[in-house]
Every structure is written in structure tokens, then in C-alpha cells.
Length: 65
Image 1 (cartoon, rainbow, N blue to C red):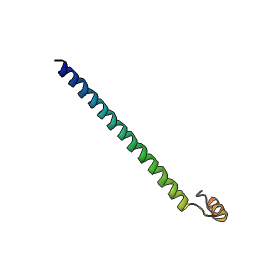
Image 2: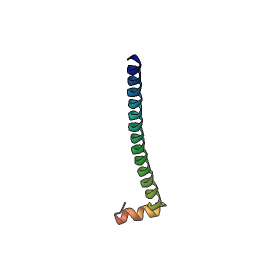
Image 3: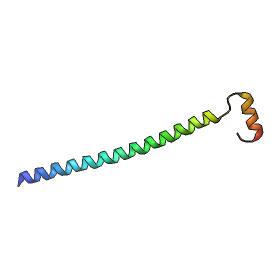
Image 4: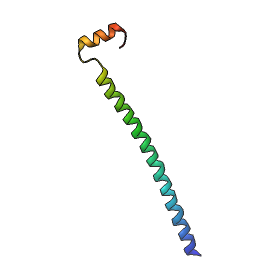
């Protein structure tokens, strides 16, 4: 009887740890997607943005800045 109780507690503990691990992995995946999106937007802004003062002023005069 005691052996069954020990096994049951061990099983429940392992299941809880596995559930926590899955939840942690899901949060890490969501965080990685957010970071990747921010980095992509930053790269796009840098690639498409004005490269010097003249381009910046021209873009602001055009109203697209």
C-alpha cells in the first residue's frame, strides 16, 4: 500500500514538472517570436530609411517621415 502511494506521488510530481516545462517552452517561443518581429522591423527601417541628412530632409519635406 505504501509503495502504491509513493509511486502515485512520484507520478504526480513528474506530471507537474512536465506540465510546467511545456508552459515554459510556450512562453519562450512567444518571446522569441516577439523578438524576431522587432528585429525584422528594425532591419526594415534601417534598410528603407534615409541614409544621409539630405535624404532625411527630402523625405520630411515630402511628408513621408
